[in-house]
Length: 371
Ligand code: GLY
Image 1 (tube, protein in one colour):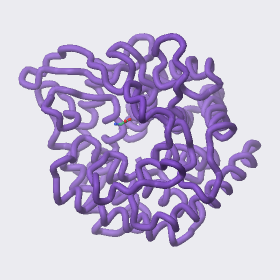
Image 2 (cartoon, rainbow, N blue to C red; image 1 turned 90 degrees about the horizontal axis):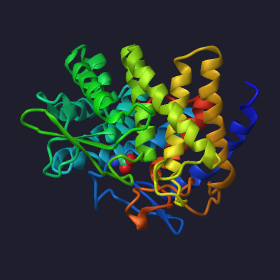
Image 3 (cartoon, rainbow, N blue to C red; image 1 turned 60 degrees about the vertical axis):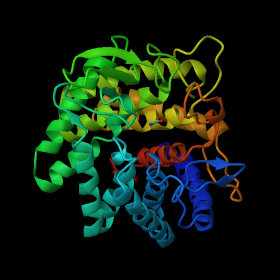
C-alpha cells in the first residue's frame, strides 16, 4: 500500500502518546481533556453516552500494539460501566455506543462470557425502546418518546450483533425497521441529514423536524451527517441490503462536497450562517471511518473515490489538529459537542480520538471491527 508510511508514522505517535495517557488515567472514564488533563465520569456520570470510547481506543491499540496495559484498563472500564447497567435510569438509545466498545469488544477479542452477557443486556435495553406504531427507536429520556435521531444509527450495530449471537432475528428486524424510518424522514433529497424527527408516539404519525445539536431543524449538523454515513454503511454491512449503502453514499457525497470547501476539516454545521468558522473535527474523523467502510463495500474507481476523500480528511486532521505532547491528555483538538453550546465548541472530545485511531488503523487494515 503506497500510503502506508504516513499512516504508520502517525500510529507510532498515537502509540507513544496513548501508552502514557493510559498509565496516567487508569480506572478513569474520560470524556474531555481540559488544559491537557482528562476528567473522569466513572462516578459523576456513569451513564453518559461517550463512556465506551476510551475503552474502544484501548481495544483498538491493544489489537495493534499488543500492550497488555491497554487491555487491562479497557476491562476495568467495562466493569465500572456495570454501575450504569445496575442503575438503569439514565440509559437510553446510546447503550450501543457504551457497550459495543467495552463488553462486546472484549467478548469479540477475548471470548469473555461475562462480557457477552453485558452486551446482550445492553442490546435488550435498546430493543425495548422500539415504537411499534412509528417503527423507530425512541431517543433519550426527555419526556418526548416520539423523537428519533440520526445518532442512533451507530447504536443499532449492537442489535445486529445480538441477532447473530442469539440466532434470533428480532434484534435485526427492529434495527432495519428503525434504519428505514430514519432514511425516510431524516435524509433529504440533496444528501443532507436532519438530526431529530418528531413522531406522535401513539399513532406513529410524523409531526416535524426539530433542532438538535446543529444550527436549526433544516440545517446539516456535520456530526449527525457523519453518524448517518457510517451508520447506514454499517447497516449495509450487517444486512447486505444495497439500499443502505446507497443512502450512505448519498450522505457521503454531500459531506465530501462540503468539507472540500474548508480544507477537508468540517465546520460544526454545513448549513450554519455564513461566516461561521467553528469546526467539529470529531465529525471529520467519524465521517472518514464511514467513507472507509463504504469503500470496503465497493470496488475499483468508486471505492478509490471514497478512500481518497477519507485520506485527505485524516491527513488534514493530522496536519493541524493533533496534540502529540505526551504530558497532556487527548489527541484530536477542536471537536464540538453542539452548535448552540458555545462552551463545548472546539474542545477535545474522547470520541474524536477514537475515530482518528480507528481511521488510521482502517487505512492499513489493522483495525478490529467494533461496530
Ligand atoms: N449524541 C451524540 C452526539 O453528540 O453526537
